[in-house]
Length: 135
Image (cartoon, rainbow, N blue to C red; front, side, top):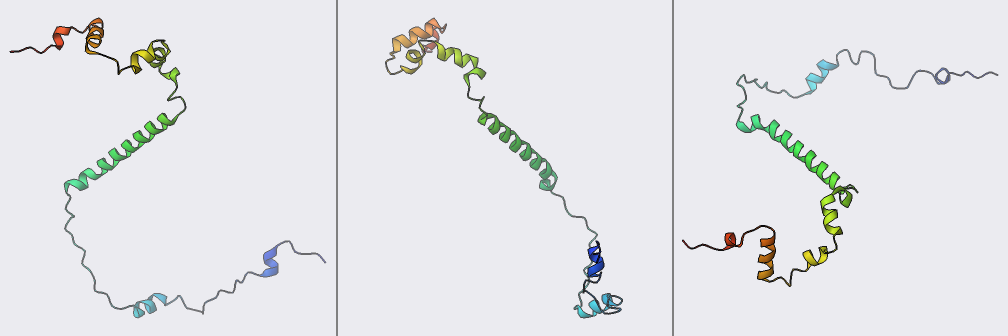
């Protein structure tokens, strides 16, 4: 005995979901009769008042969106592995590679006023400019 390959032929098309004849013919009238009476609300022709916030709101939202995107990109760029490498900052790499870097930048507690003024003078700052003038 050969089986039919179409499953729907064996099962049939009826799903068992039926409604009585003419049920939807007068359905709208019967539903209106069952609902309580509602008063009609008049549609007002007066336009809604537009204040400053309603006009500015789209621009504020757009500015907030762009600020959020900028902060997100800034955060992602700071989290990238290349952000903290010395290869991306050649000036910092050259300063750290000098042998006198720790003594010059970390030994701050033994600095006296004379040596500080002497270094400033060597860097081109005139001592006379630092002195207070009495007028």
